Amino acid sequence: MKINFSHRQSAHCESGVAAALASHCGIPLSEPMAFGIGGGLFFGYFPFIKMGGMPLTTYRSATGHILKRLCANLQLKIHSRTFRSAHTAMASLDEQLAAGVPVGLQTSVFWLPYFPKAYRFHFNGHNLVVFGKEGDDYLISDPVFPAPVRCPAADLARARFAPGPLAPKGRMYYLEKGGAPDVEAGIGDGIRYVAKVMTRYPFFLIGVRGIRFLSGRLAGWPERLGRKKADLHLGHVVRMQEEIGTGGGGFRFLFSDFLREGSERLSSPALAACARDLSSAGDRWREFAVMAARICKGRAKAGDSYAAMAAIIGECGKLEEELFARLHRIGRDLK
Amino acid sequence: MAGRQKKKGVSEGIPLVQYGPGSDGCCRRISSSETETVDVVNGQAWQLIESQAEEARARVLAGQASVIHYYMVINQMDPAMLAGYMGIGRWRVKRHLHPKIFAGLGQGLLSRYANLFQVEAVDLQNRLMLQAVYEEGPGGDED
Image (cartoon, rainbow over all chains, first blue to last red; front, side, top):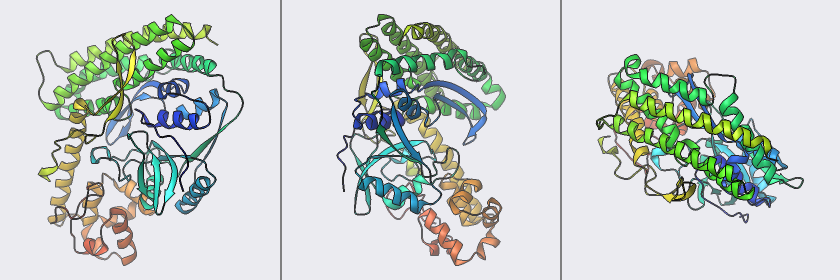
């Protein structure tokens, strides 16, 4: 059994799945549009939440947020449920497939055998689309991969019921078209939401204030933690920023492409200018990552230091503060 | 385990979608299997796991921990996560990490552990330290 579902590769799993499912419902969307309308860009540094012993740093909003906001903005109905037992969860998946509906799943990456070894960590926030079943294998459109993949039922069941932080509890979802979508209004909402969170969130670890806070903390890591642990913390930040699913530069490039596409749809040169500025902020983030990688590898060049990295992140904060304040003003005049 | 050093990048040559600045200063979608920066930090994370695995192996060989401890560590779990997968209390998992208590473990629990770690129950009984579930192919570095 195989549903006619067009697979497409994306940078980020959730916005890729969201774009593909929305397109399947008759609203053609690119990945950056899904990411932007879903209000995906974020920054948060939470030293008191540990992931594998490392402080949580995130460049995107919480798992599930993008899909929720996108659907609300585009009048899509989202049918989402979780399960207690793996048996019912798999049966329910089969039922939807039999009805011809491609189904989105939240899973762990660790148990998916088609992932290269280097990615197989206990990360529970992965998203994929199941669009068929052949024998014991599910046919999966996993946005990370260039082509559809297969996964044995036992592995998929385990991936759906991984315990721990962000436990998916078998979460599955599918979309249904509601009223007429207003993509332009969705663009405005995505911009307003992200600009607000980045500049006005009343908590010092979130948005540009969070970026500044990280900059200050990072400079002190070698003294506070010792060199070895500081390098591990640093590597973890870079992984959150550059590893699989971010599209590079901690999602800044992805959101910049959304602003560009939005500027074309709304014919707004001011938005296009913001897209370029965010792209240069992304460049700075990447500069930090490259320097960090040199330091982690023990191949630091002259001028590479924790202080220098902190300065770059501080600059990113400054660039983004100005940029998102401007986006906030532009957003008010949008639909 | 020294042979774990990757020659290829993290994506093993699979082209990935990324976004990057184009000539007009705006971002565009690009396809690339170039992951140099990520390779370094990803490798760093794996090095940590490998050193923890070595430590766990030594503790099991020295009789300080049960073989469950080894499989827990190489599969990047802690007692809480393992308890979640097993559907038993964390304190019970912690008990099973002691060699003496592990030796008295019933067939039922043993095969559930084996099933989770994708090895045979006999392997656990014989204290064989095989590979983690994410390693490709059967076999591996046996003890």
